[in-house]
Length: 236
Image (cartoon, rainbow, N blue to C red):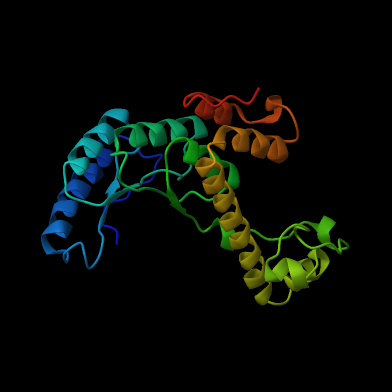
């Protein structure tokens, strides 16, 4: 269960960001005062502070002093530059307890998931899997599955051409695509977890980026290279 927080756009600045951060801390205290015992339900705090390192640090210091079993990193993925995004994620994970879950809100792109796991995040949520579709005309005569290596029901039963055509007339197409997109994300996170357990996560990251961006590190976005470099993962 998440605390009630005061959310402002990540591109907002000034006094409103401080107001939202301070209100979120007060609301966390009110949530804790009425929340059932933790053996019945877990209550996560939601860290705010926008893109202001000082405000986010203040929020982190206040919330980590409260008796909560886990933390969400909020107030990001709202249109800010990626260079700002990853730095606020890292600032947050650096100050959060290492023995409690870290949940990064609103992140779902595959590259972002891999990078933010490297930065120390454990859990994610996003509407992205339900909003991605085969709308490009190039799929009209493509009779392959979305992913030939995927075993989800959509890839086993339907071609790209069928789904592309179905999108024009039947909302069920969105269901089929969502099934595949979620299956892809679950498989990605499973692969990440296995690589961590096998102590080969840096190698996994390099292979993922090479596949995603087609070869050498030059094609990988600069913010990705910078973020990974901040935790000692190079793509060379």
